[in-house]
Image (cartoon, rainbow, N blue to C red; front, top):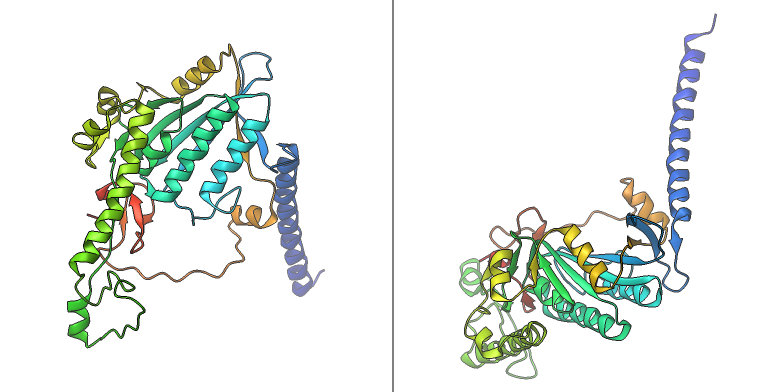
Length: 343
């Protein structure tokens, strides 16, 4: 008869063996998935089928997603940043002769002005140089910087209930002079010029500072309106004095105002992509990042990073419904709806 100790050891060994087999199975499945995808030698991006073709064809439409806040400093999935992600995917789509067009699916409240402009530039540049159409499909939200990014497309389809528009610029900063005085905090500033500490939160801003910042906002707004007028073939002054005052619109309202081309669903965007590319049939594919051990472990809930500490200030952290809190950084210009900015 086996002793209780040996029985215990035998049970532990069995559990350990099962755990090792389970881990091995998951890792092998991940490796199989990684190597089963088609990979481009230049960009390193893998390709996976999203919607199969109805028949036999080599023609493809590439689905590219632009989701969440837009920022040049936000980490990317394929490259160093979100903007780099879009650039790399468009580059691969341009170089692949079997890719006949792109569907850019947007669900974004907007974000940083420079990042939004760069995405617009890359999309428009891809369309011009490759000759391949880009159909934009707007999901729940494509507002402000999300709408700006869509301007590079050949054709824009919005869901009837999409929140879009919000053509405008916002810059947010805080003044804590009174609060600092109450707690006895004083700021000591040593500067080289009178404007070097512009918008210092520990004092009231000078009129010339506000005028300078307003001029920057106006210049950025002018760029936004000009892009919309050019791409949508609308009158600049009519935009400036009318619908481009920062307000949001539903997809249906945007269609009536000429801000989008049509209303529909994702399948309508696919059909339009095939039509513009003069295809009777085409597979819809999307790109995946090359296999990376750290990313794979992260998908399993394993991380090698230390948890980040974040200071939450009530009233200063706003969020769009169903999305993480959007944190505006003081002094940065944004293409964002006021509701997302926290006003």
